[in-house]
Length: 165
Image 1 (cartoon, rainbow, N blue to C red):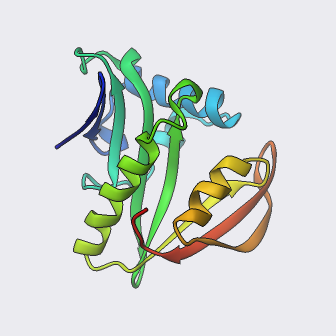
Image 2: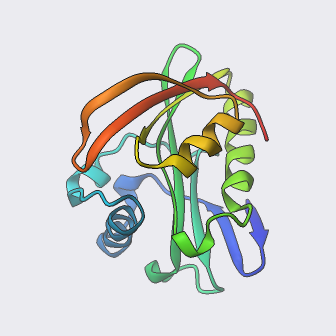
Image 3: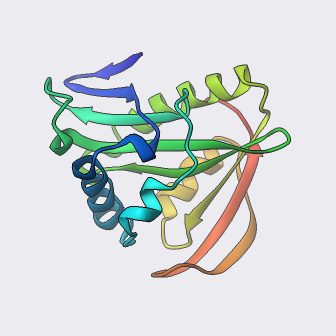
């Protein structure tokens, strides 16, 4: 599965536990640069993200075996009942607002609905206004404040029906 735009492509990703140490380092760097959050290698390796349509990597260039080509990811996991949880959705700042997030989101929504889910839940930093707007356009609403969820500040739990945009 490839979702293409220019030389940038969304591809199905392996489970985080199956990523090489080099790939996990690039994931950690992406989280630090885009989200301002520092995580441990073990926290990434132990994320319960299955290999499915809600596990996408955004890669730049033709050599997709090179971890340096990682420009974004969307990691979602079955949560409970009819809810799927987006555990991480990050895109390098230079590639934001180019439709790549919508491309991945719509693919994820199709896969989640096909798997029997009808709702989505995620956490977003309170300071990430663009991210909140992205999710609101897709029908999510802030349900709770999350004090101390992020090391760098307040977070919100958002939830809504699975919808394309």
